[in-house]
Length: 264
Image (tube, rainbow, N blue to C red; front, side, top):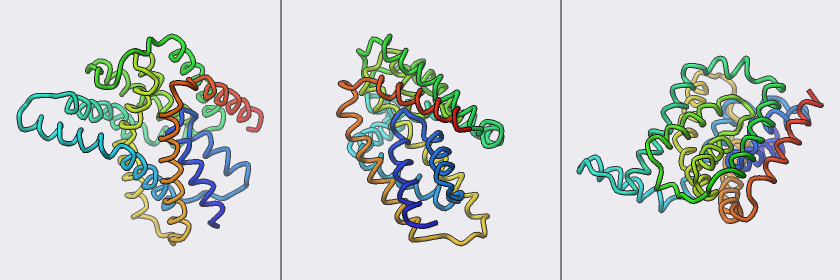
C-alpha cells in the first residue's frame, strides 16, 4: 500500500465514520473507482484506532464525568445524570453487539453488494430527512429513558446493513424521539466508542491469525490521518448541525446511492 492510498482511505474513514453519510458506501466506492487493492486487516485496525482516539479526545471531559458517575453508581446504587447517561451508552451497545456476533457472516457476505449499499444509502437517508423534519427537537441526551435508549440501540444494530450509516441511523432515532440535532449527534458519537472498540477488537483478533507483512509506515499515516480528520469532523459537525440541519446530508446520500446504482 502506498502512502497516498493510505492517506486517502484514512481521510475517507475519518470523515464518514461520524457524518450521517455511510462509511461503507464510500469505502466500497473509493477503491473501486481508483482500482486499489484491498487495504488489509492491519490498516482497518489502524483507522479504527485513529477514529477511536479522536472521539475519546474530543469528549474527554464528558467521558471523565460519565466514568465517575458510573463508578459512583456501582458503589451507591443511585443514579445521577452522568451515571444514567453512562449506563445508557452501555445498554445502547448491547443490541448491536449481539446482532454483530449472530449475523457477522451474513453481513460480511450476502449484504456487501453494491446494490444493497445503494438501497440502504438512499432509503435510510430519506428516513433521516423525515425524522429531522418531524422531530420535536426539544430534549437533550440526559433526558433519555430506558425505552429511548433501547430504540436507539436497536436502530444502531440495523446499521450492520452496509450503507445504513451507524451515525446516521442513531441520529435518525434520536431525532424521532425528540432530541435536538446536537443532542442526537452527541449521543451517537458517545455510542460509537464501545462499537469502535468491539469492531476494532474483532479485526485485531483476525489480524493475529494473519501471516501477511504489516506496512508500518502506511499504518502510521492511516492512524494519524483518520484521528485528525475524525476529530475535526466531530468538532465542526457539532458546531454547525443546528444551523445546517440534515437536508444537505440527505441530498448527498441520495446522489451517492444513485451513483452506486449507475456504476455497479
